[in-house]
Image 1 (cartoon, rainbow over the protein chains, first blue to last red):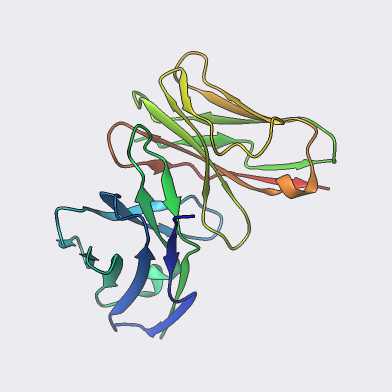
Image 2 (image 1 turned 45 degrees about the vertical axis):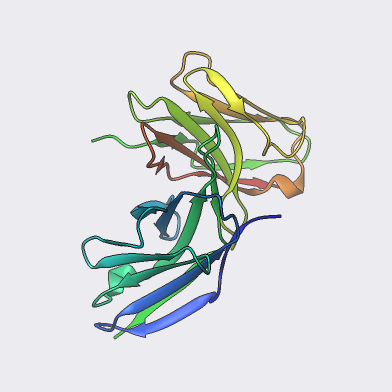
Length: 113
Length: 111
């Protein structure tokens, strides 16, 4: 079935470096994508979203890129900090009468000094 | 401000017992969602409410799972005759528009 997936299950980066987390989606009709951060024992926390009529959106230290041609989504974190260590999920909003989210399996980001 | 709250945070049930999980959404949020998250996996959709109407329950894994939101605010997810495979974190989310705000979840362990 159609789903959202991730290329890398674990990403280790040095503090201060930039991080890039990737995601592939398969539903070409999806028009809204979200990145969530989940720390241990907590619920997913919204980071940034993007609609399909955009290819880039920036927030504070984060940028989301959307490539609809290859159905690829990425999250870039600038100057990664220890507090960024968590599991990151991309999610796809299916729309079409329901706003349910389809999540990928997640990428664990580990930041070391 | 107050976010989405869920109770209990942890629940241990013996196989065959019934459980009820509560979600208090953000005040005024029309939409409410339940997700199930297995260990090491992403959340999976269970059901969706718009006010008191359950518009989508396609993700409920069996007829042992039942959700309600009678007054369009607080919601309860009930699992009857729990099985070991029901062990997971159950997440509730609410939204007013596109962005869904998640609660901390209830970790259910069935022994």
